[in-house]
Every structure is written in structure tokens, then in C-alpha cells.
Image (cartoon, rainbow, N blue to C red; front, side, top):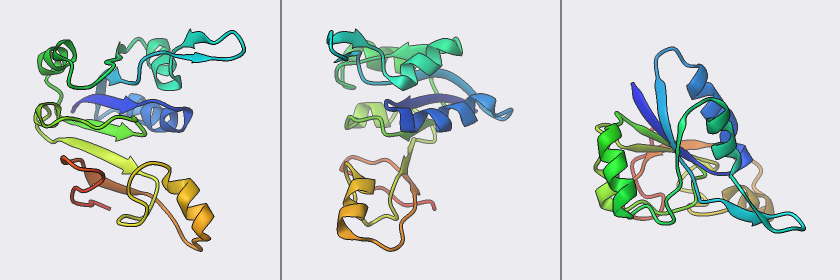
Length: 150
């Protein structure tokens, strides 16, 4: 299956690595947030996902907003079968959601419907949850609102 992986922080890298190592899937591109200032010098630094993709020789797409026409045109050219997502950090517009045949499937760090949205691990800790986990679901328009797969 031809994949375009979407993710940004270090926590997303193990999922990207697992997909790269898979013999059943081909990661043909990565979508991540644009380079951001970091460190004392505030110099622009690529995200951990971008760095890992570049090491693996995978094309990296860094749209400021995922509704940019250049990004959408490239996504259509690639024509992925599915887009796995782990902590990407931006809402995807309908026009992007409609590109992959099997949609965008998100790994979310909570047992949905608990802690939809950003910072689910932090919210679970602050609430004193005794049990937590991760969920996969199909991304739809709206925040973490698609059908849960597991």
C-alpha cells in the first residue's frame, strides 16, 4: 500500500519507523509542520519526523497550511492509498481528506472518546485517569470525530 505519513514531533517517529520497515507498505512521502525556531539561537530546525524522513530518503512536504494548493496538487500527484497520522498538528481540510482511497487514519494517544483534541496524555495525567491507551480512527472533518477502529 502506498502511504503518505503525517506527523511532526519525536513521539511520531517510532510509528514512521515501523511503516518504513514494513514489507507490505511503501512510505512515499511525509507531511509535517514547517521548520520552527529552536534553541538559544532560535535557528530554524526541521521537525523530528522531517529529519527521520530525510535520513530515509523520503520526500518531505511542509505546508504552512494543509489547504495550500501546491501541497494539495502534490498530494493528488502522489495518489496515496492511505495517510497514517501521528501527532501532525494541523486540521486537514475536506479537499485533502478526500485524496487517499482509504482516508487518513490517526493514532490518538487516548481511549476515545476520552480526551479528544490536543494534549490527550497531559489531560489524562491531570485528571488522574487510572487507565489510558491509544485509539486509531478515520479522520473526518471535525476534531477527532471519525469512527474508531480500535
